[in-house]
Image 1 (cartoon, rainbow, N blue to C red):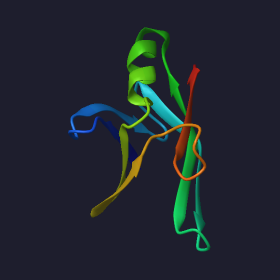
Image 2: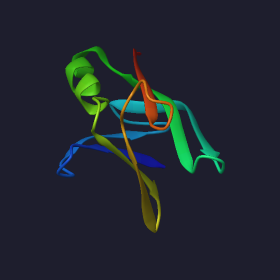
Image 3: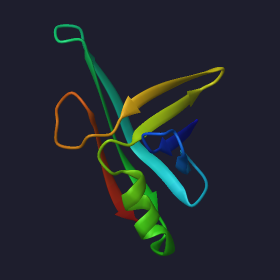
Length: 93
């Protein structure tokens, strides 16, 4: 599965995979609440030293995270610190 990080205009800032690439996703968890109709998607983005600035920019508030569940995409807005949003941490590999 691939994770596409985009800005508000859907310009791709970077792509992360589960097992490959300069950016790798681990610990991803999607939690849905039927009582308040929200979805929380959390995970850690691992990156190489030379991609630190790009990794931080990819996880910035108000960016989008698109999940490639082929043949369709599911989108989430990145807004760390709010319980109804996506919380991403970045970690150096």
